Image (cartoon, rainbow over all chains, first blue to last red):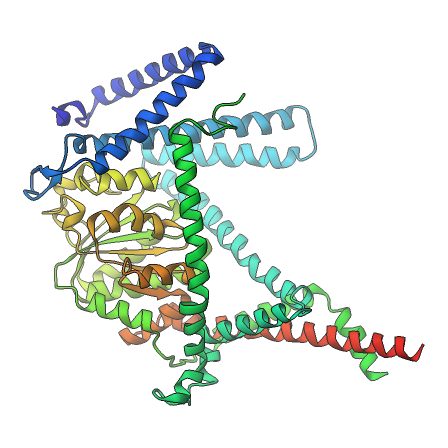
Length: 272
Length: 282
């Protein structure tokens, strides 16, 4: 039943389904927009609760043998067959949120450009970049000829990837400048931090490791090799604090998830 | 008087001088082929043994989640791991949660496949970039063919020989994640844990402290720590790759930072002493 419901479509029926989805989404958005504020809050709460409930129940509900083609040992419960379609649906919703973000960006930069405000040149670059990338990506998919492919690669690899590398590489220059101007030892803790940072750095680089490479591979003096000290700092001292932070974040995330799921969260979700 | 001149000079060092020093420190070593033998770390040794123990024709999910920004570390890591997999004739599929990784990995494997007698679709496949990792993995675990649907060449999963017999996450022998972001943790949370998968990771240096806990807990059975891990892995494979070539540059850049931290602090110390001695005389 489920495989028929979520059967992949091809050809004209695919286009019809896509158009149907857009029309349905448009109607739904129009209905949601026309709802009074008093009704929006319970609606969001119900949808959020049901969404969370599905995954929670599917995870905790006892499983039994549920063979699928090619996997006779497959386990699951009555909710398991919906996992894949639900994941696809959520990916589509995530896609819509990207669209929402794009509209928002266009509004902000469009206003800045129309009113000739400060930074209008940046806004113009934004529109040119977005339209060029979007057009070439669509053309590459629709008509994958050599010109479209090369133009797309020119933008994606030649510009986008190169800019990404450049931006990240600039961090090294800031680091060098900051290491000279900002890393000042004024207290005992700062001195300890500096010494540990240096040992970890030396232990993490090939030339640094050469400083103590002549120490024996076993025995007491082995413990003084820079990579062994680095390993001890990372696996014992540092990992304990990282673990504590991770536990804190985990508990915090659980609390936030429960608040959102049960509709207790205030702010952007429920307050106007 | 001489000390005062030094202080004045140190105080006036322009940041462009520091930038030039960094450029020199990074670029000069590239003109020389210096092979430095490094001690192999426990984590890399563990990773090598795990991959080495994989039987021939095992099925590996290769999660590549890096972009041009972390290419310095992640590219060398990916290549070293791919060489090891291809030498052992292990089948693998690539899955990316970073849009750039799709083309970066495709280029890399396409360039290597002839040397190792691999064929796209038969021994490996690239399923490209997917959005929303959490929800994708929730669907991927119980039903791989439906969730993946088709590879980047538009071939359906059912038509790919490499995907024969792969239905759920239980059919994956090992999960490798090369990452410059938080995708490793998401893989652990939504795939490794649920299916008790054997998982290894190759991460950037800044991620090492977080991943060591995952290694201690047994969620990861091996880890390649940063560029240094890639150098060690190349050494284990007996191959000189990008990581080994970059090791001197990375080392000199780190040493420059250490030297500048020391110099900056020495300057502050001398300046403090001089000002206190002037105050003492007054």
